[in-house]
Image 1 (tube, rainbow, N blue to C red):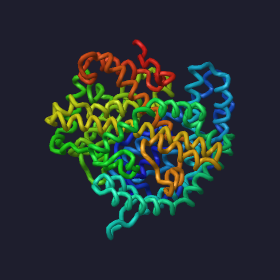
Image 2 (image 1 turned 120 degrees about the horizontal axis):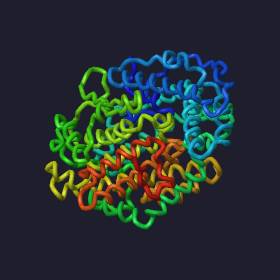
Image 3 (image 1 turned 120 degrees about the vertical axis):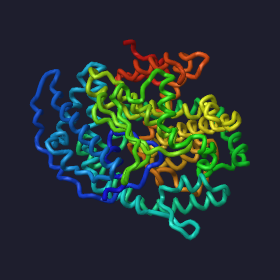
Image 4 (image 1 turned 60 degrees about the horizontal axis):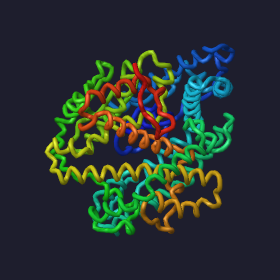
Amino acid sequence: MRTPAACLLLLAACAHAPVASGPEPSPPAPTTPADTTTPSSPWSEAQGPDRFTPVRAAAETLLAAQAEAAWRGWTSGEPTDHAAIWKGREALLDPAVLAQLAEAIVAAPAPARARLERLRAFLLGEQLARATAGPTQALAAARSAASFAWEKRTVPLRQLHALLAGEPEGPRRKAAAEAWQASLLKLEKRTAAHDAALLRAGAERGLGGSLALAGALRLDEPEHLGAVAEAALAAGDATWPATLDALARRELGSSGSRLREYDLPRLFRTSAAPGAFPADRLVAGVTELLAGLGLDLSASGRLTVDAAPRPGKIPRPLVVPVEVPGQVRLSLTPLAGLDAVRALLHAVGVGLSLAHVAPTAPFEDRRLPPAWHTQAWGLLFEEIASSPDWLRARGVSPEAAQREADLDAGRRVHATRAAAATVLIELARAQHPASAAARWSELGPRALGHPIDRRDPPPWRLDPDPLLRAADTLRAHLLARQLSASLAALAGDRPWWRSPAAGDWLRRAWAGGGGWVPEPIGHSSTPPRT
């Protein structure tokens, strides 16, 4: 039987991946990859402005097949037949296609260049995933099986966050985190084998080194990503330590100088009573919220919601774009609590952004938006569930509503700064490995807002990110904040999520798909007129 997170491996390689909300479940056991022999590209001799039309057509059918398989795996636990997904599309795995795209990118004008870069990033991600399937699955299986001992019981690594959030005593949180670290460090050899396979696959495709791969996949120069990360930190350097200190004193009765990362799940835990957010009102409540924007959860039939519980179905929300915009699907199992509302709102933001893309938009704008672009819409909608106005309307006391708003603001700032720190330290590790530890001793406290223990392993030993996935998280948070500010200004004296004008604004922005991206982040985010 396919384990719950096997779907995530199918979805995670590229920027087009469907979006799941909530903590990641266990990775799957290894499977035997299908034959990766790649025949010569049938379109290698094509010429002219439409020479990549066959590539796009094959990619479109591949995305639909992957989405269907992901949907079946997520909603019923059905195993995935990877060979069937790729049958007839093996030419997309030909490295020569990447070389042809690289040549075309150099000569293309700006709008076409951006789309070709996204097509190349998608195919590169697919090829890397296939080339490193063995080490990836071995590492995923090892992580799934790994655990640490806690109070005479065995705890899976993935459950650390919940354990820390529920533990009121600081020394016990520290002990649990240290046990988790010790277990995770035992996987270093498998992680190194995976990273080495990734570098070999990149080199075979003309991309030597992790930063070259990261730049191609993240659609940006690593140096620029570092500049974005540095600017994000600088913007909050003067205020974040004091904000974190105030939250720590109120929530934990401790100063910010005594905080460590293992304290933050407890600090940022949701405290609102689940009874204020019953499971049987989850979908109805979101539907009513959208009505205030003049939006429809079904997007006029383009977004299908499956909220039925069934054996084998993973309860967390997942958005699967089978066709964009015509067939977007949202799976969930209604649960009680504010966290369940946030998870659904995140998925709804993603789903509606896909279901409103203009059907005439270019393939890359419809099907291959940057990962951070799609995630930003989810973060924007998720934030609604932390608005004091929205919480008070659901019976939460004014004091508790403001508390949740403050905590969520802290979560978002921390996530932004942690992502920025990851980008910067991975750049330092790639460029100057001998001085990376010294760099982290300065960068860590600055970014996180609290001291770090020098005896702790550096972050790249616990959760390495050589391909700079954290840059997508960083840019998603920055764009979500920018979108929220633009919508608030448009709505005037009412919350933006109660403004039909804001709904019109969103529809115009969504129509452009991945082609509407404010550049650079931090400037105007006005969507095109239609």
